[in-house]
Image (tube, rainbow over all chains, first blue to last red; front, top):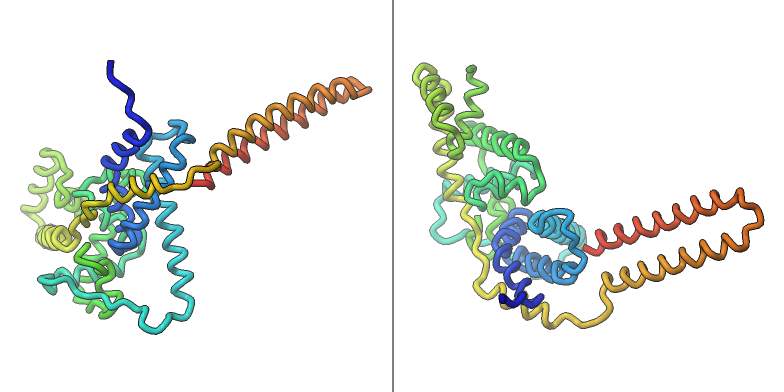
Length: 184
Length: 138
């Protein structure tokens, strides 16, 4: 007879299975690895507290993604409110360029940043999730057709920007995902 | 198939998501259309550049250990879930008592229906609020 896993063991398996997906979703929303890792940790702590109430009305992954999106969006709102407050001296982080990052890739990243948010998020997550429409659709709770439409609009827009040779903005907006290292 | 329709097919082909049959149709169109060939080349190049530029981020190796440590350090106490369970029992007991009380005290039997509907409505409201609280607690 096989022993039932303890709640902590069962939870450990959930963390093992979902940590990467939760983290990548958080990265695509928050655009900062350190913040995304903090958010992912918060997601799992909330999940641990809420697990006894999980009634299986939706799949576990749908539920985890919903908690992840809520957590990240709450953090994003909090961050935006903080940004409207006056900054203290010396608190503005400089955003380094990743070492060995070719200029072409920086330019692409800067152009991606200029896309409308919903297109940007789908595009970034698509490449984070190794080109899986299904993963993106599930993570963002969007129909698969919408994921494809957003992705294709994003790419057409990028192609037009590249063809028009639109210069990327310099400074903070040019490499938004790179705060700690070369995330994207 | 016109060029506009083919553009979507080209994008899917660059993403590796077309059937062999669709690919054949695409290739046959590309053979005779310079504009679509240029679009295909541009998109293939863009896809390669995006793949290089948007690399999946790596979670730090000790993430799981940190999460488990954080969970162990969570204070033991009454969680919202426990509170809601207690509310369930109090709500059910309260409704049952109220129903008995009203049935005994109501002089006019015609009012029974009114009270029953009112009690049902209050019960339903409590139940829904409880679900709402659960959702908000996430």
